[in-house]
Image 1 (cartoon, rainbow, N blue to C red):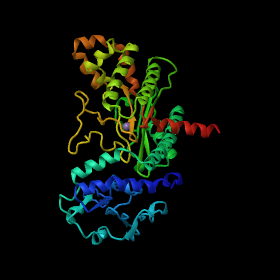
Image 2 (image 1 turned 180 degrees about the vertical axis):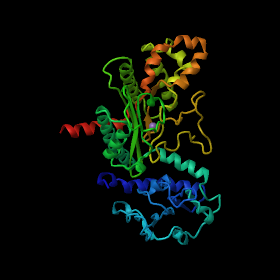
Image 3 (image 1 turned 60 degrees about the vertical axis):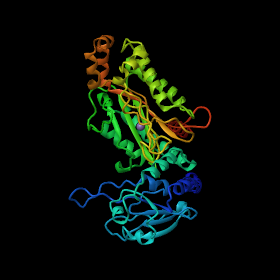
Length: 448
Ligand SMILES: [Mn+2]
């Protein structure tokens, strides 16, 4: 493990405890139990789906181990029941790493439910997890109580120093992959070959990626979650969109870049304009700023780009008001990032049980809160030429006549543009851009 990151782990655990203590008191729980999750088997099969750890467990323990439990009573050292079976079929989890083991009292358990005999006082216990066996041991009310989870999720929005360092490492790892993918594309690779180059450079197996790579050439860039991975490159190469991440101790990076082999022309101009727009939107990530406002600003900026490129001959504000920009930019500006790629809390109100609704006409916006110091968000504006979304505009005579359809058709083979960075909200001034920092760190290392 990276020393520099783990130096801040002890402080992280103290902060997690300090966040959880008042919540347990408020809701009258004597203790919190977090289960890491159980493997899920395929239907009528003895093969498991790839194991994904309960992020609530990962918030406490920096490793993805199944059938394990953290039991925490305020004022005490958290107790970790760590699953290490005697198993000659599978590689058992490695012993707890000394870099974090000191923060816990640790009992190694050999069987799935062995922690149960140690968790005696179940009456005032809050249990977080989704292992089916939890329902055998606890009442429905004890498992995943919604008010407590709401409040814990609010805590998880603000990242500790340890979490920031994990996100930095994840970004460096992802940037390595992106550089390799860009080189592969420049050398004429197919989507599939580019994907393999990405895995090699990040040293991730497919299952370790925080989300499935989106590696899209030409019109595939206009399929928002494209996972096709064509084995042969297209005869004519117009564009390359890659949305791919990496993880570090459970924390995710989520980066998107778009390239074209063209050296001039409308798509080149659009790409340059979107790069400028994205950086400007990143600069708007300030403590206290409304993410909804930032998302709506993205609509205005993209509308201006559409007008300047002579794609839509309309006033940019009218484009936004009449939802024309939604046909070119049909997703949200981004989301929280952390242990989950689309991290928790995006719509939570500070008032427990309430949510902050999305603005009308923007059903895919994943974040509606104002930005708090130490929260991490993605900024990922996009501009696409998606036939299913553009076609309905033809039925609106005034909009139809404002669109330069021949130009739109010439751009459809390019699919689209998305540029995405991972950004930390600072107390004052412009944010920290983990993704751009990662790319420049790698460029400097290469130059040295
Ligand atoms: Mn994203």
